[in-house]
Image (cartoon, rainbow, N blue to C red; front, side, top):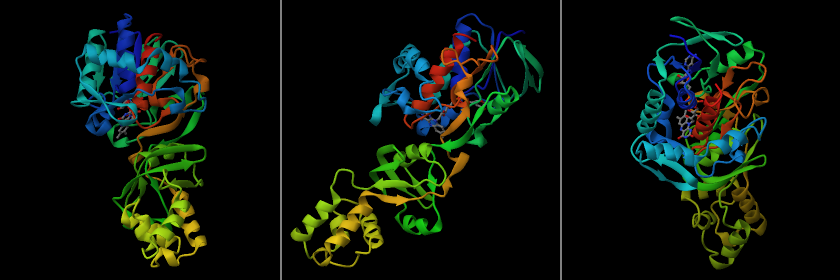
Length: 391
Ligand code: FDA
């Protein structure tokens, strides 16, 4: 059978794009090297898929061109996706920060996308790996079952995170073959790792989670920070990790709602016999309070016998705990790829490669990475839907 459009990748963006193009009467083939579609959707959001966010806006995305995503996000909004859920009678709920999740299971989302593809007459083939892409309208995709040719090819193979469920650098390799620049990919939304000197402090605190502000450069995130045996994790750290560059330090404000210096100096008068760590533990988990007090050199003393200078130094430590990660946990646990196919090469209206009409890039393969909280799926839906109007 001949196809008008070949979509490579049966993930979030590919399935959305295929259904939209099929609805326009295009003959669409989707192929995926996995033996089932939407593997990342199925494991997302703890199995409930955080499928979009009510706060979707361009400033929630990282990209070499921060305005690139604006057009697609305007044309395909969270309410459009919710309309689709309504049509398929899929129940959902809102959690904190505008995050929307399935009530039942992420399977609902995959089933819905497959139903949309079926209604649009889309052909799907699994267990079929795309090899080289050649030609320039029409394009030929090499596969184990021979070459497949179509006027349009959509690169929807996502980013590099979680290779064990099928992530590949395929789209980036095709881009390079067509002389399309690729912004060097790096893991995002990923736990940060530290040198042994910092780990010696962090490790005994494993399991503690505290709402704090994590800053890196000008980015600041107020959410939970989780201390682990390997380093720092939790939403605030994952968010900051996408902005973090090798060699940069991060800062943590463990008590965002408190003027720590004023508080400690006030308690010095009110509770002079209490140990400094006990006072700090009025607002922080005891083990963390102890570690911060030890680090600032004022442990083991009643607060009444601790100098103003020492308490001010402790307050500075609490409000601005600065440390330099040595790296991240990498692609094994990253939720997203920061970087990817340079958006300067793409039309923001169509997702088509400007220099190669008929070649499209959607989803995480492009240099657009969202915050934690449903933003990445929303980018997949929006960019996939837009490309589906033109492919
Ligand atoms: P996606 O990765 O979904 O699909 C790419 C497809 O291409 C895959 O099916 C792959 O098998 C296929 N493929 C790759 N190479 C190929 C080749 N050579 N030939 C054929 N097929 C090939 N985001 C969010 O908004 N909310 C959330 O709750 C989560 N949760 C989450 C949890 C975890 C553990 C991870 C790793 C990620 C998330 N994300 C998320 C991020 C989200 O999953 C991700 O941004 C989207 O799935 C990206 O959609 P794409 O369609 O671009 O790629």
